[in-house]
Image (tube, rainbow, N blue to C red; front, side, top):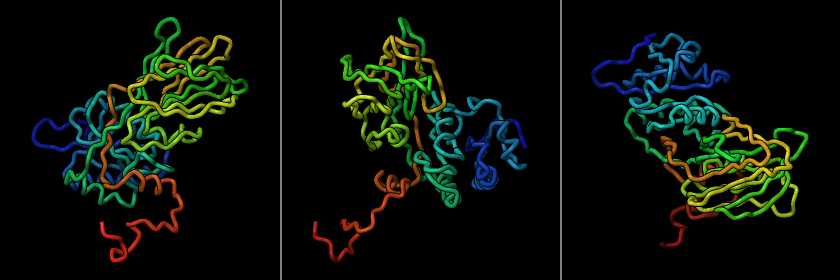
Length: 313
């Protein structure tokens, strides 16, 4: 192994990040590193991860991802969507795109599976990929003054801190109140996050090309608490009423913040997008059907019929 970065000459650098807790990652990492080197790349890993995943491959080891974010062509992520969210956190403030290898469960953000590894490296080597920008949200917690400023790619989830008690909230869109209720919380999401926590809470699936903000109540104790989809220029807010029990805010399931009674959570479109590398061309509809294994047997659309039986355009 080497611990020094290339000092001169042409080199294509790729940062490889992995989920150390997944056995599959340990099996795939060595193959990925070998293929990257054979394709002419300089693979780079965090020292802690390289010690477990590199298997003796001559990778460059670094202590901080910021050391290479401005030089790396890609960040290749081994794991599930949670690992990609971690990579997005590390890449924030840089323009490098993320490319996910799905070794998790659904893997909505990941671009390819383990069996496609060879083809994926070949496409990366030929730069046969597109970069897609996904909108984020900027999040502010206030209580008289600003308590926290943070962000999320998927969602900011306001939840009860005490599992035995509901929180009481008032939701707001563009400075106007919409509904007040008690419940388990509220998910404030992006279109990317619409297939994550917001989806589990009964929210709609929103295509990534649609720029919007989502508000999805969680187990609301009221007759009207429907998911809302608003313009990307709107500002969503949730106020925890003074008599409520305390709440917490999870951003992408990674960053946790306390939200006391009388505090306010405000969400607006993020300033910095997250960039995802896409190898597979095709509509989001196909990704949705494939990832969720939706039954489509019996479909008789134009693409399902032989060309001779289709009506002329």
